[in-house]
Length: 171
Image 1 (cartoon, rainbow, N blue to C red):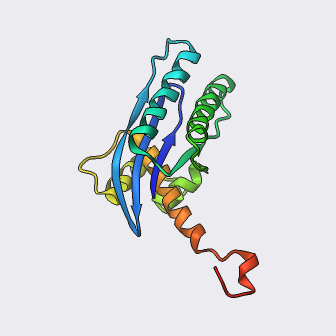
Image 2 (image 1 turned 180 degrees about the vertical axis):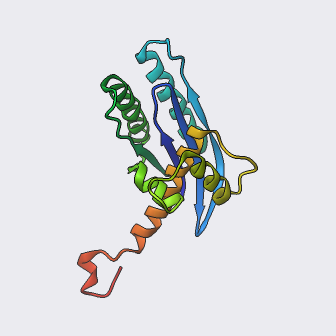
């Protein structure tokens, strides 16, 4: 399964693409969509959407995973971040892809094994898990971590017995 992980942000949106082949995770691409902070929000969101759309067309992922962000300090920042999240969700839905959302706690737990892991730990573990030649930029590493979290969660979900089949001994 090919997964596009997205770490949304109105200034910097990280992305990471991986292939899951059985138990192997293979790195395809990662990076950041950087917008000009002085540009109008609508233009920044359009750039994010356009670039995500291009990535989807180029790599043909089979799923999109987006970090579910919680920010309570600054309401204006939280709103802008919410707009960027909405754009990331929209890009996946418009491409007719299943879209999953994961909290930072879920992502950190899946990648590092500790829900309060530091950014540097995320960067180091994504490098290790994906055999990257160097540590990815912070937002890109976060997006790769979201994709890895989805790969682990998706695989686990496939192994969980559906309740309606449990009584018949089927999965």
